[in-house]
Image (cartoon, rainbow, N blue to C red; front, side):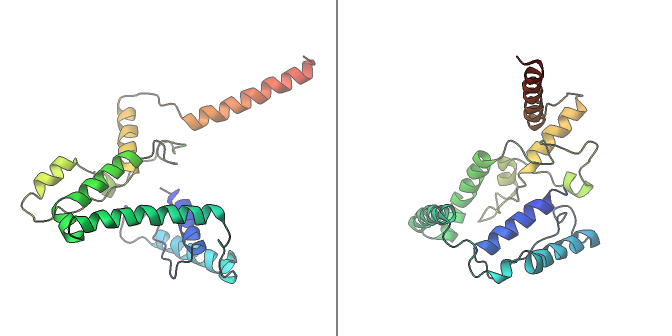
Length: 207
């Protein structure tokens, strides 16, 4: 969970570079608890570091002239415009929600954009780390079960989705079944070390 400190700082840095008027960083463990002194203190320090130590407050437009950022922004605008036009064709956002279009679109995006690896979950996980009880109790159910639960409502409520939830479940199940999981990142690192070792051996032996 502490890797959320890195994620939040990177996201805030990107927001500032992009010209955000205001940035609020949530505590790294806010997904599991509402109030925690350590999480709040670290979040506050993240603000202080970005505001007073990064130097970004002394640059008017840090991302000015960046082709990558300008190009990605143009792509985002084009995709967002296409989505807005589709929503208009359905009669507006409220009608799109009533028809389930928004919910279907989000559910589809979650399924296709779900990462295969998440740092600290199944990529370089901390051995022995367990999920807080609050997170265990709020597991994401299926879309069909969610629809059945809210079938009497005019608009199906949106579901909160944590990308790491399914990977956490897979990791937990593999532990219960005593299955040894192979870390791809560790294998790549091992391969690099073996390659360097062979190269050094050839040099030493003048092969």
